[in-house]
Amino acid sequence: MKEKYWVPAIERADKVLKQIGEFPNQLRLIELSKRVDINKSSLFSLLNTLETLKWVTKEDGDTYSLGPALGAIGSAYFRQFNILQSFYKEASQSVAKINEHIQLGILDEGDVVYLGKMEGDSRVRLITDPGMRFPAYASAIGKIQLTRYAKAELEEMYPKQWEPKTPFTISNINVLNDNVQQAKKDGYAIENQEASLGFHCVAAPVYNFENKIIAGVSFTMMTTSWEQKKDSAREEIIQLASRLSQLAGFTGEQKQMIE
Image (cartoon, rainbow, N blue to C red; front, top):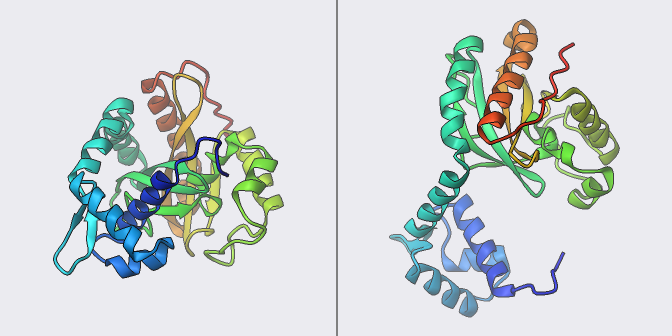
């Protein structure tokens, strides 16, 4: 959706930076040109400007990576909200109790962007790592953050059909909305093998001082552990989200409807 005072050049730069961030040190000018649908001449000028500003770095082999200027901006962002630092401090207590992996993520349009991860003793490798994006409709940490949207807004966010990650992935907007409304009522979201077969997640929302959801936290574990720990994991992830919300200035009462 284009705003009245939209600046196309910034939009093009945004597309380029996102592609480079997703595929660091992999894309040359010609590959980037195809991916972002910008002609090579215009893209060359854009990349040269970004390189001069140190937003990107040109590597050996003429590929590109994100530059140090973006690192500084990112650090300033996290200092402003301090949520990542708070997560690593508070999540250690939760991992000590449940001994399973915990992740922190924010919602960006229809995807979750993972910011942090703290691991339990399980040697199981998660499919997501900090910096990665993943569809919100296929993750508990995404669905709990989608609770801020009405059905009409979800319909704008997602097309009529979308990519299923497993046979258990939610397949249409009506089921997604039902899931989201249930999560909103409960104060937590559950995902059973929707992102990856054999894995289960439970997530809770993090609020800020404006009583707005700014992030989500989730436990992820395999089926055998889930059958034993799902109730305690649900309680603990709600407690962790509550602690993070308080640190972010939230003064309301976090919903804790434990069945």
